[in-house]
Image (cartoon, rainbow, N blue to C red; front, side, top):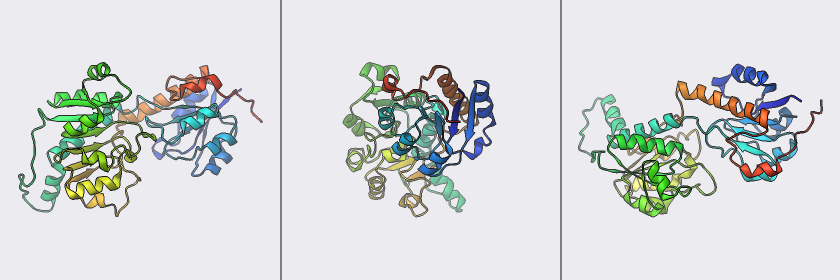
Length: 335
């Protein structure tokens, strides 16, 4: 039986998905391109699909999982998979997978770029020059990076890549990660710290965790209050990891010195967001993952995930591996 692979929400840059269509056909599958904005769109377009590919939309809900009995695998185009509820999928015998190798180098590079830009106040000087001024560089303190402390919350692939680059700049790197023991943290190039210790010590705090119920608003008013007044916050993971209202208050009051953000609680960032008016914030439009190389690498990795599943009914990037014991059986097509 031909395995059907359904793209839920297409990305314009990938259209018309000829690369995916050809690779999946060569492996004996069938690729279908959807255009879904709601749960009902998925239900009406994805009938008989075994694999659903999702870019950004949060529309493959438990209701959709229940109504599409052929679905056995959900795959996210990217590292994060907060578009799905893995526990709900597992309860229904559905595997959830991601593309974990995507954009490691790019996000690490972007993190360092934001750190340097914020620490050296590059955007401020650039804007002042654009306005015709000769800005005074001592109006706000600038510190030498070498010898200062970068705190990393999360030391997975991306966090470790940031640590490696930061050490090259002479930064002292500390990290907190509940999934790693102290020796593993040291092996990845950082000194282990508890969350409380890290918040208190870091001159620069960078976030590298997946979005989950446990990490939503991980950086809240309490956490911000435990940071040093001269500290800078950098976020290139997921916007809701930070309580944006609390961050705005901390930035406006001078409780922390500044922030460099690539992600936001709601995207695109609203035109009237107070973040836009704060002169101690620099922002980029969720662009950290992008490069020409990462974009094609993502497509290669996604095809690999799909074709591995087609051959073995499993793939290495499944994030809810406990589902293997009660994976849905493959159903015959109704056609």
